[in-house]
Amino acid sequence: MQHSQQVALRHSLFGPQPRLGIGAKRGALAWLPADVAAADAAAPFLVLRVRRASLVEDALESLAGNTPLSLLKPLRVVFVGEEGIDEGGLRKELFQLLIEALFTGGYGLFVWNEEVRCFWFSRDSLAQEGAADYLLVGLVVGLAIHNGIILDLKVPTLLFSQVLGEPSASLESLKQVDPELARGLAQLLEFDGDVEVTFMATFTVAATACGEPKTVELLPGGADRPVTNESREEYVRLVVEHILLTGVRPAFDAFRRGLLTLCDGPALSFLSPEELEELVCGTPHLDFAALQANTRYDGFRETDVTVKHFWEVVHAYSTDEKRALLAFATGCDRAPVGGLGKLKLILQKSGPDSMALPHSHTCFNLLAMPAYTSRGKMRDRLGIAIHNAKGFGLQ
Image (tube, rainbow, N blue to C red):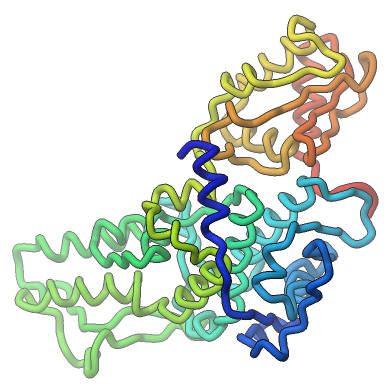
């Protein structure tokens, strides 16, 4: 997807929507009638004021009472107690921290699969009751799309298929969420012996309730119905549907509703799941040669020894280190739509050679550093900076 297409698409996605109000407490998110939603129509910006110690709660509080029309205003972010004028960097940081908190912050909303390195909706019964939380996640994703913020959202392409109204419940789809279970079900279908005697399975699946194990019947009386050679295809179909659709329906429906609150324009129907994923998550491939070719210099020249050492160190980085550098310099560890060649990085000279660490202004994609004279010092100082940076200004 070209950058110009992305911009045009973003504008066409946002149309008039019903009013939305968000309660200030976790679990209190709800649709409010128009006369209750208290949006300040005169305010030129949507301002989110958050404290790092209570990020999710403050985000809910800041969004409370806004209509989708207000949410579509230019966004400004204030981290309470910190310096920093939001010209883009604070917005990027807020979305990153929100996604991290909502997915991994102990809310139990999503489950991580290490093999595919993706999150999927938790099937815990307590999580499925938290529609307000999933609505917030969807709303955050919709806000990010509107503000052109690339998210480090580790979810399968299957999720974007379902957002677009293309539900899929096949073994191939299950591989995106739980490949180990998909392999086991495939083996069950291919087994040559007596399925009932060998597997001793019933039409149930394991789940949890408030973290405690429980059994869920895939159909009425499923606990008393054995899986046989004749019924195994039905069993596999029901298991896959449960994992991908029915078992997570309340959570997914709330997430989709939150996202579509801001992104339900006519252009959405023309997107493929892969294009929607790229719009949300950016391009996964990191072409640092393209980034180098497009980098501008302030105080440095491209032929300076410091610049040469910088690119030698960076090109030798692992993928994780390159992502950390991008996050440090730009506020996002993903490439924009179109790749790193579309990113305008500025490498600025902050002074003569010293032991001072590099610093950044993510609002401007600007990375500043002293004129280090050795490759070893460059590697040491840059490494410390990119792995120990979080926050703007003073706490």
